Length: 350
Image (cartoon, rainbow, N blue to C red; front, top):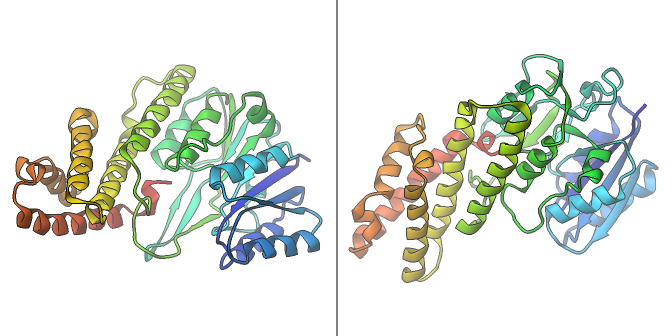
């Protein structure tokens, strides 16, 4: 029976960590090791990790200086010993049959195993799942479906063959804090020739509160552009491998990408930066939206979004000529963007 290494990056997770780890210890699939990577948490997360490691032989606790989630995951990869890697976020949890559902004991020796996930929070429950159980060899169907439903955007709800990761030096990009999960999945998929997809939906992706923002932080436009360029690079390799020509299935992702740009723009408008710095940064974002016509013209089925894009691109708002007009419009724009982001919800970035 293949062994699964479950890697959990941990930072300030004392409220959720026990539920996460307990859900893994309850798995019906038993050949596992659980790697708890404490990324310099200032709370009690590290102590909780040590407690589990002392009580359960399959649990190992590691403590590293705070370096970010990508560094923690990469460290976990370096310490893993299983044939397959599985990533779980410390504030999420899984159902008892989560690992069993991947079919690792039935469909042997494949490069990638995937299933869906359940979104909990935002006053709703939503599932993203595959329509049927199936094995694919060098076929485009599982890739297209996983991109359309944002399953590809996360390293979770998947099993990765560790030898593929190591032989091709696939790691999480520690230089960025936007889209590194998506880039890892796409980079890995460049080397995939066999995939099993399950109709299972046993990963619970939990939204714990706070603002309904996509990133919950300001992301410099340069980072957004880097993310976009890297995604295009990996996707082009996958398209070539699988013979994909029609890319209309990426429209949902392009809509979500527009929201990422707008979400970061909110941070600019709400910041305590000087008037001049805000104006300079704002103009950079609008110049980018205008330069990428395909992105700007993506049809979003939301009247608020259409109105917002027209306002943001208007000469009046772009000029910042009238201070009071700017202050009034800024408040309206911030509220409008937040409304749009809430309507699309967390599923648009996973």
